[in-house]
Image (cartoon, rainbow, N blue to C red; front, top):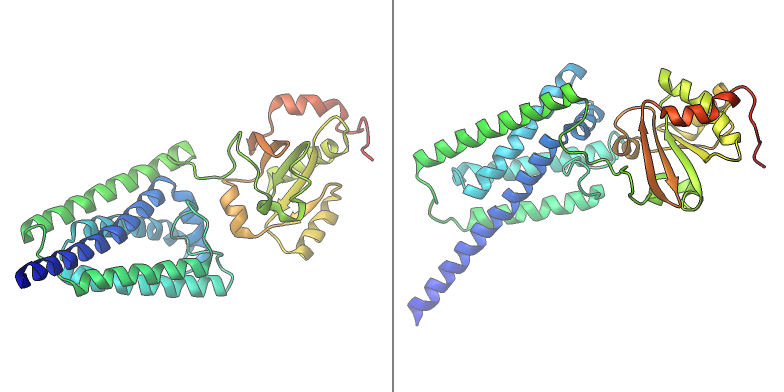
Length: 320
């Protein structure tokens, strides 16, 4: 009986240790792969941190993505656990400190860990990191026999490094050539429901009727061209109402409106929300009863321009 209890205890500790490292490793691997497939969001986050010169941000984003993928595989396979577990705990503590600093100083609005895959608050991110640290602590506290031999661990580490490097490089090369990521994580997709929290000031007004929501950036030449057209569109009774968002303070928004003599509502947006919704400026979405029916990036459709071209100088019907 005593032997049976001992074996059950050992099996329980073995299971706890294996499951703990497997869970945390899976999280690191998934978030690393997401960063590799949708690199633009993470690049924006790295830039917002302002930790490195602009030229170094790209290299930093690539290096961290590779590290995250390799770390995830290493935790799943338990490669060199005597070094792996304490190093992971230190890394999680550093990332938690970075999250607290960047969000408290308003440089970023979240940890950037999940690359827009899920929306979590900074506090939720810190709590999750505490959970990951506890799980790694359990894996470290309950040591089990290595799954692989030393030579096999070295081989697995080198293979994971090579695979992560090649896949990440290929994804960034695709982004550079095609001007779009392999995986589009933008919430703005055709036939999706518009989320009121994206423009809270106009949450109710955007769920009924036809609306044209545009995201602009001060100083953007193409945005200035859009504004000329949008002012006419907003005045036309047979065209959608226009609402714009820019990543500025309310005071800066007012200056922007006055500078361009804008006649449609312009909302001050959080820069992080803007970065999640847009890949470039200007971006526009046509809403039909709160459903995204069209998405424009950079250029308005020719068919839409043709509808209003005769009235660019003199609006046909002014809305009341």
